[in-house]
Length: 325
Picture (tube, rainbow, N blue to C red):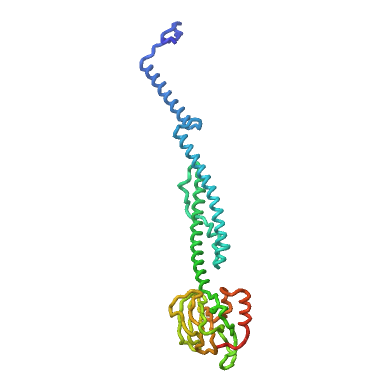
């Protein structure tokens, strides 16, 4: 290319040399450079914004974001499994444990309640995966709340179980004289003939005929609250407080094997059959009290009698005969 340029002069009908000053030449070069830089920057910006071209940092970040998304999906699958397990525990809690311990089930609206009020996840908005992150966070918080509720429920059930165990140990459940030691079951609960004045009156216990010094056993766990002969008609007798409103009384004893305020277990020997007090012959007069009222002891022999033996005992106890005290 020729560096010298010419133009045609129509007036002189000849070619003349184009003379370019240094200022114009510098200005043209500068304009070219500016334009080149501008279009270069614009092109680079467009390439950077294009998905076709990514920097190593962007590629690394994209891989991390993809991995996080995958991890969130795994978390949601695990949350599904945890929800199934928790629902099974909740059903057992309501339909088995609480029914067994006679307490009200926890309402579903309490277990499944969400979180109201202000937007708790505002700081998670505005990102590409905001919906996934928000929903996962919400599920985790709800599951956490359900677990806390269930944990408190199990604590309550544990307390109820302990109370139930104490109640079961407090209820009189065995015959106070072993069946093999009995001469006979002389008289039951109900109206009987008084052996001394021959009048018909209420007999508030059961009379077990046995030889003198036959062992007498505690009907259940409790504490001895009396072991004396200061109650009219009972002679030497023992009273055991079992808690939960239960108390048992063992009268006409020959001697004691316990003292006042002593703790006893079901089946412990507490005394021996005698003929003290208002008694016609050696026997044990046995009473069961519930909430300060005397009840029929026949309903409290579940621990040491077979069904056949219990049926025989009922038949004997229902005979309206003469009591021994």
